[in-house]
Image (cartoon, rainbow, N blue to C red; front, side, top):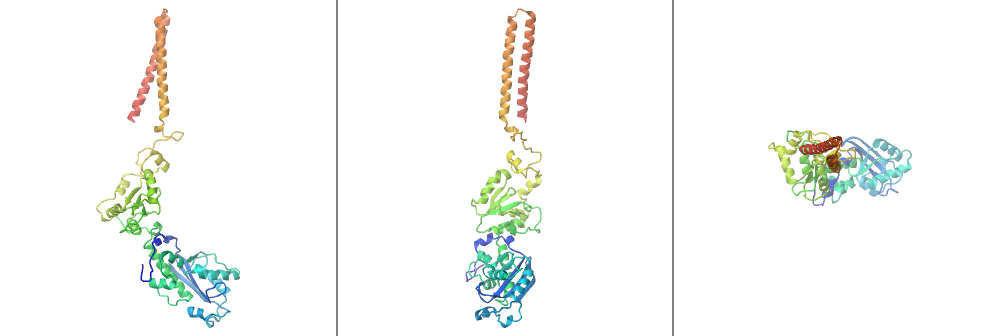
Amino acid sequence: MGDKTGFYIQEYARTISVSKLPESYVSMDTETTGLDFNKDHIIEISALKVVEGKPIDKFSSLVMCEFPIPKQASEVNGITKKMLSGAPPIHEVMHYFAEFSSDMTLLGHNVNGFDRRFIERECLKISNVSFDNEWFDTLELARKMYTGHLKLSDLCEQFGIENQQSHRALSDCIATHECYQAMRLSLLQITTDANDFAPNQSFGGDKMLDGLFFVFTGERQNLSQHAAMQMAIDRGARLQNGVTLKTDYLVNLGGETTGKVKKAIEYQGRTGIKIIDASQFIDLCNKCGDGIDTVKVKVDKEKIKPVQVTHEEARDAKIESPTMLKQNQKVTPKNEKGCHSKDNGIGRKIIKIVEISLAVVLGFFALICFAATTVSSNTSSTITGLVVFGLIFAIGCLLLLVSALGKKRKKKQ
């Protein structure tokens, strides 16, 4: 948006989260005898109650003023001393206004710089009246969004809003509400906050990016981040503002190594998140929308039934994704110390050394027994020695056989 007056929307505006802006509020305005809240006085208070963007009630009252009204003030707001004759005093109007506003957000144009100061000063003088409400200034929002002159009359002109009785409190309340709604609408057309996109319920078919989590980063000259996010949401995707363990795709529109890209690279080994550029994203969307091909990631998820696996198990087992572990795929069990048995090679080596050492000792002992029987002249001693030799030799052979069978079994696994 821009014209010869220099009224342009700023780049920063696309980062404003519309979901965090008030949707229900009381648009309020005051008219006073001057601009100095320390010495001037309120002579009119008006308010428009808005619920979910729609006006439902209004409040307006002139305020009795014991002091003369400067000519300059009357020329601006059109309120004269005669008009205030019979008006209720300020403490009554403040009570009515507090009751009308309840605990809703008080919204106004330059409300923090002007109206709020007058209201809070009057509260100091009146017992049992206070405004602990949230205050929202549409001028502050406009400054974040636009360049140029940003008075209420400037916004009305820019948005084509007619303020029927400018500088009268109720008419200004209505105009402020309408300008605020126009600014919200402008933000919704450029926002890059995932929370500002409503899920699309109308797009159907088997080619949807159904329920996949997308994160976007950067900008492309012919494809804004907002437009890309809308393309994804139109095809059933779910948007996120930041990369998490749930993210399926990070779309890097600008091709730069942003913080989101670094986070996605960090998570790739754990979750299998895919980092794609703008062209790949457009191809993905075209496949979803034209009925020619089925998106590959959709097919993968239909072919593989996910099972519940913790991120710790996924990380330790070094599988591609904790949510895409195939059925019957086993995560290596841990021993009591938290280490995987397949990595416990030191214990197996020790057992092997013990087995070999025992076989060698037994063999050596058998040779000694055999030698002793050959030099002995006693027949019974010779027979006993041969029996012992045979037993020791058999035990040694059995140990070697068990070791060999164990190796063979491990190779098959």
